[in-house]
Image 1: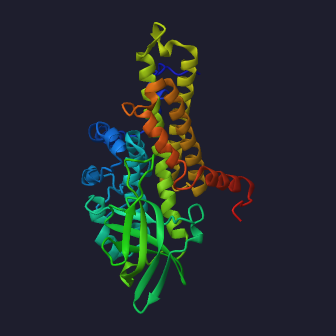
Image 2: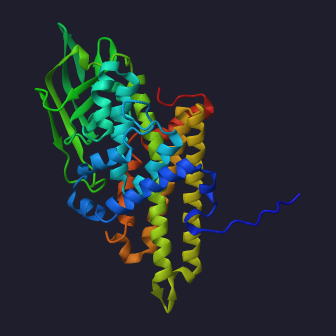
Image 3: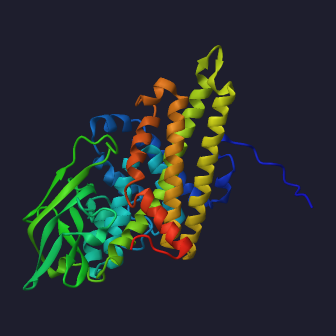
Length: 394
């Protein structure tokens, strides 16, 4: 029996009408973040990227917007659904991967670590100020020789009376040089433990990593810890193994699943607009079959990724999402976004390498996104292990 409802209007920006599956509250949050990105990020991000400058000055505005730790409950956090948080990540990364990273590291790594594994006193001390953007956090897990294998970390912490003494080095740390506080993971006789290390603690220094050609609108740093002495109150009491940092990484990866959709959408929309305006041989680029094929494939990838992100968001909100699902989401959506960015760059021709358009910026940013929070190869092995029951890591 056929429905009496007329077919919906086809809209290039949402071909499958996926937005029709969002609640009024989700749409309101999405639209608020989208407006912020268009007003505050898009007019300036090319300059930030070219100069290699992170807009950390936006943190208080992001806090006022309510996106810092927005999926956490209490302590000044908005307590939204996982889907609403994902939609915010989508819009932030449509502006730039560095902006989404700024928010993701703050909320899903540093704040989540304290919220999930910290004491009540630690939560009260740090989370309200971090949610407001008054305190910037970073997350120290990756090391020069311990990226995909965090279990081989060399940073150590030992007890000395009632204190802890930390020594080690962390690498590729987003926000590291501008952070007011770092969550540092270290090997101890009691297992992998997490520590809250405030900026200015004697022996704790950072230096920005320069000469990078990706995520240029984001600060990436090295953290150095030399006999850093911390009181017992700096220890995250509930984290005693790799499960602690890995749970935080899974939160961040979930945000990337959504964020990649934003980068892909931005590239697709830029290519679609350009193809309709650019004249070649007396007619628009969009009138040629080969270009229409490219646009169709890009639209397919954007819609597929959006649907997958939304499905995982609903699973997370219902409590059924597993880390392996997040791995599949990141694997698919970042690879899709990379393909969309590379195709869009071709549609724009020579203009595809200009920062007057967002495409080349997204393209090189995604080369970092496909690596951090688990490389594509690692996520392939996670999914493969889940499919076969055989773990290739061991």
